[in-house]
Length: 118
Length: 107
Image 1 (cartoon, chains in turn red, green):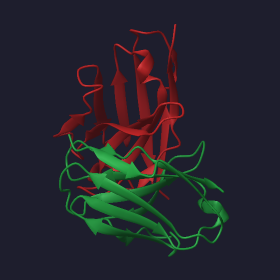
Image 2 (cartoon, chains in turn orange, green):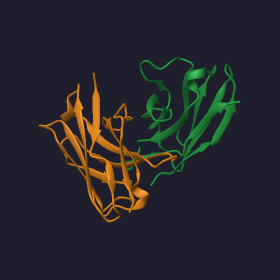
Image 3 (tube, chains in turn green, cyan):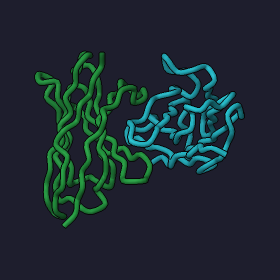
């Protein structure tokens, strides 16, 4: 069974940093591209970042470019999102999600809440 | 970036109704268009991919159509468990984008 489990969310002050993790199981992690998608309270879905299966390519939404860094460890079946210079509008539930090539997000984690507030 | 729009933003319907949601891309995305259902407090769930292919396990009352810039999600006979928010998403570009969502609630 495919499972994606996020962790690392919490309350952080504006300007602070946080590192999210996503533990994957039930599939060959190193064969899939991985993504972070977020959802601010009461709002829609926003794609944040993608990383290719071998970490050759990383892509970011303009809203996080230069502040967030996506990475992965295929040996540990883990995906990460390093978030720096956090702002109030980064407050959201952050989901990790799996894709393959240009296919859809077929599996999602349960999400982890990040709250940026003083 | 490719912009996605959806209409309507919300609709009220009754069990048994036929429901249609449209999604439009700001440029041609071929058939790289996918639909998700999301219920409150839950992660999104993939319904339809590549514009018209039903994801495994999704009831056949859901269907999708379209290509290029205009797409449609249809629920042929709305069931109680279908009251939710629906999002379209394009994967044509390496910068993925979602539509703003369509909330389907009880009339």
